[in-house]
Image (cartoon, rainbow, N blue to C red; front, side, top):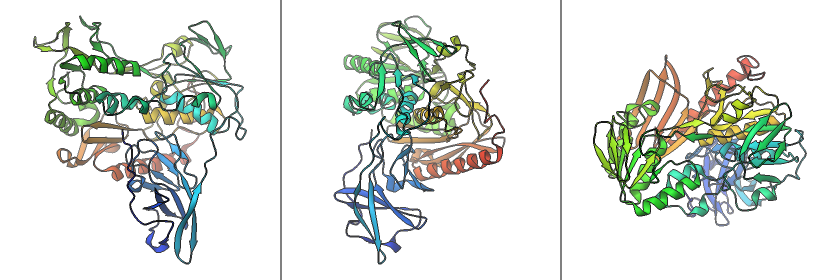
Length: 525
């Protein structure tokens, strides 16, 4: 997790800088009153905003200006140049805004402006009599906040049995698990945030939905009425079905409690086996290696991430892990786990006091299916994230939506996608009628190799590599039937941002041309 640098660079913007020194549409880094500040000349207007992304401290000066927004190079958060508002996840908080004076060809920052507080007592907004959100993960928590940001003043109830949620789940397999981040970094919001903003947090499991009566029944017998319902139940780890899979030293990683359990086990273990070369599995392998454990990754693929990232990037990631002492047994699966070993399908035994299973996840659709919603590898929604039942929406890992770029229904299990869908669902609950059309994005970190991926390619004919993955400098374009579907980069953050912006422009053009065709309007059924 990045903390951002407090070191100041560039000129003191209180003293001013020549207007001619500001190229149109490019961030210019300086500082004011001891804080890093960006100037951006955009359409003849000069904006001044904080230079540090509020997500993980990314340097916005290295980002990309798109229209009247700036995008973070690390994880593609998006901020308004005019107001500093966090327009696109994973950032949830705005950056500071500064007043600007232009006189006699000199641009000066004159002082910081105050952001209006997030409040349920803000401007009024049309909406249902109440909103219940099932799931306090990325999609659910982002939706609850967006309802308040949009001025909705009705009751908002966030239901999840995990009392610690919402928290920064991506960090569970990265710095926190590795011991490089304190637990104070994990909650998305400070204690009391939800009560302060009129969001009721219910730590209970939802057992049933009645879409006719518009009620949700909880495991403790309580019944909640809703005007609108958002399903954001996420996904659950796939469990092994082999002898020994239920032994106490065998773990999965999905929740904060899971992560704490792995950390406790790692403190007593010397050797670990990670089953599965998934993103979670490989990040766990790195984190446990950083804790000093001997780590072996077992997976059926010939190369990690072969189907997701292709052979070139997969092999490069494997080499990086091997250079840090991670061992691999690829082309194999576990046949049995004992208290001290993992036996593979070829008979080899690997000593292990700790086993972590990362073989994928499945969408949590049990509630939706029991309620009679249309389910097909996830909860089927239309472009407004509406399900087949009136007043019921779905977002995040469970949502299978019509992708306006490919024309296919897709489901994506990534943090930023879930947050952005939660925000879009909230706006549509309030009647905005905005098609969800964001380009899918995810990031993963393997030692000193960060990878950014934009677009969606479930399958491809060709993976075109430009540059050298081993040198941490490359871009890979995934092509099917001659069409570029996705773009992965190492060390080329601005190229990733440009690719995302270009894809977004293509989507906007298609929507402008085709709405309401192509399944954009109407219910999911």
